Image (tube, rainbow, N blue to C red; front, top):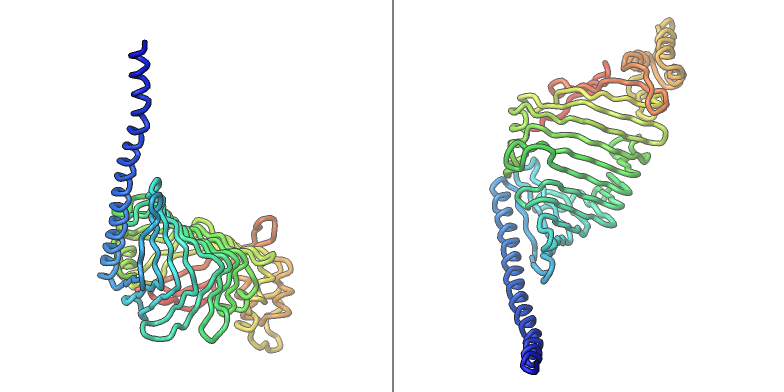
Length: 377
């Protein structure tokens, strides 16, 4: 019995030493693995920059450090800038700070933070646009060379022209891109989701100076892969494959004016938009004067014109719309609005449904020509 007790005591005294030795070995192996992962991240970033540079997209940092030991991989880039030499005109982006982190236990998830302001301009020239925000977060799911989902979210975003005024503001703006079919290397189909709260764009049109909310979902088909390409080549690739942008759901609300849109857009061999979007607008009669259609289309009327009959037709199309026309428009606008679409209902409100068509780049809303859109290549 004494011999047995002595042996047991000896084993108990050795056990802490065994645990300690195993802990030291594990810590050493973990340290080696972490540094290997850090070097892999650094090599991956360098390879990605090299591939992008071949198509005229240059990315750089004033300084780049990798840390986060023992449980994270953290990449800190100071004074980052991006230069897109193949764009027309060439464009350069500069901002203050970029911080990206990955947990070693979930290496296919990257989370990043951008620190503004962001300066936008031509290389070697003063910035002509500035963007700032309260917070800007980026989240990537998947491998760096084959992302499956990318989310960018801004809080209190403000874009201004240098020396000018606000171009765009939003209390919240979120853009999500995720792969729904294919792979990064073979015919990926990408779903885009854009959500904005209390957004304004006063320089686009006076009507956009009033805050509005958006919720848009669209699918992009026709990509071959995610290989680095210039944008012109990318659009040509989509056109050659018969690719299209499918707007599956788009809703914009500004006060009690609501617009929903669905449809598809493609490209012609000349790189111009081609397709149709079906728009349904609730309380459309309130949007008429806000859009300034009276000033754009109104014409002086001579005695004996057909204005009265046109307004009567408009009232039959949507009761109350004729009163707006009487107050704000000439006969050209009245006739145009009377032919623009069909009366319907949207979310319990009176609405008008009308097509927005693009025919080899020429845009028309119903029968009303809006003008040409620029080619994408």
